[in-house]
Length: 127
Image (cartoon, rainbow, N blue to C red):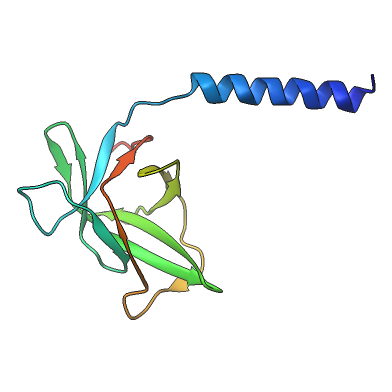
C-alpha cells in the first residue's frame, strides 16, 4: 500500500470520528428583533435588527450584508461595537459566529432578502 493511500485512509477515519463525536450544543440563538414576545426568524438584508439570545441575556445587534458576484455574506454586528461576525453555515438553522472583516461590497435594495428561521449559534463570542 502506498503512503498516500494510508494517509488518505487515516484522514478519512479521523474526519468521520470527529463528525460523529462533534455535535455541539447551541450556546445562543439569533432571532429577529421586531417582536420581543416571540422567537422569530429574520430576513437577510442590510440593517435588519437581529438579537443574540443566550439564557436570559439578550444582545441587540443588526445584520450587515455584503455581496460579491452574486454571492452574499451576512455579518452580525452587536450594538455599540465595531466587531463583525460572519454567519458561517453549520447545518440546518445552525451557524457559527466568526469574527472577520467583511468581504465584498455592501448589498443594496434589501438583497438578498432571504427569510431565515431563528438560527442556533454553535460558537458564541464573548460579549
